[in-house]
Image (cartoon, rainbow, N blue to C red; front, side, top):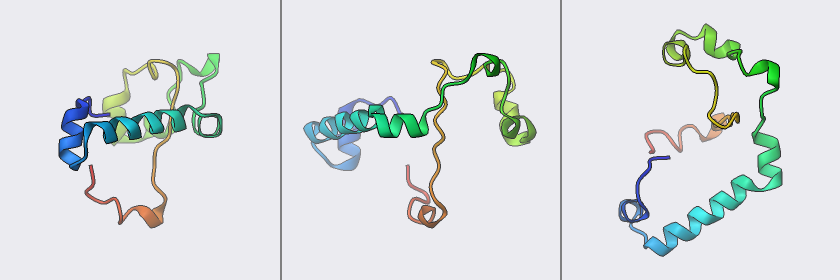
Length: 94
């Protein structure tokens, strides 16, 4: 997500490069696996590639930045949000 090399991520979290690399590979495997991928990744239909989601269009906060966007580069959209009971745990975390 940040585009930082493994060395910088390892330094930030005080872990070895091997540990960071190992966990990165585990996360890629989990995200690409069938249960996660089929549940959380939905590819748009051919007719919906030119339409913008109503939630984005109606939000002044989002529409300013997304008005000229035609979609995700590879056509996939992954919703990422925490359950309400986890919000306090991850507040101010990068």
